[in-house]
Image (cartoon, rainbow, N blue to C red; front, side, top):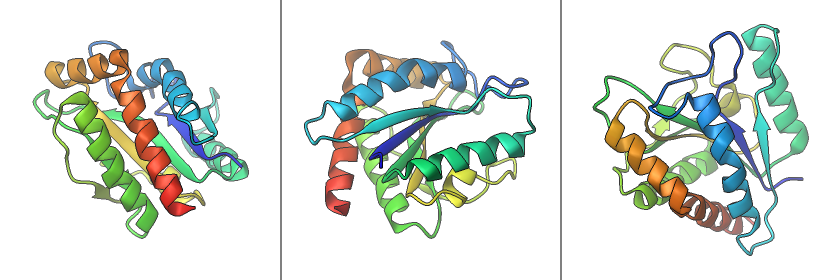
Length: 193
């Protein structure tokens, strides 16, 4: 069993790279930073194990690629899943939020805990957690609905807001976000033990 799985948001299949920021799309942004998040979690001192999952490159249809991800996540039996993303809309929004399944008490707690930790690390606004099972486009959020472990989708910043993006990147470069997420995950998992 793995304690935590970090999932890098989106994939490189047919333009499904996610939202864009001045530095990269969601897919490439989190593929760059996920290894340092994993390292921070594993070196935290609580003996936690962490793995990074990427959505597989495939010519399979979207639903088949999502089913593959869910299958791999459930077979790994993590105690917590954090799907890494960022938002984008009109260039003026700011802040950190998390999406969790409406029926998941642990998902809701993880969402609140990660929002607080990441917003402090970045010096950005802590937004309310979102309890939902579908994306704004109406697609099922399978990481929340079909996985057995508590799961959240971390929307760490607004990629089209230069100030929000720059604060997020600066906090990652300084290691503050990695440490904040590692602390939050360690606290959550010790509480759930």
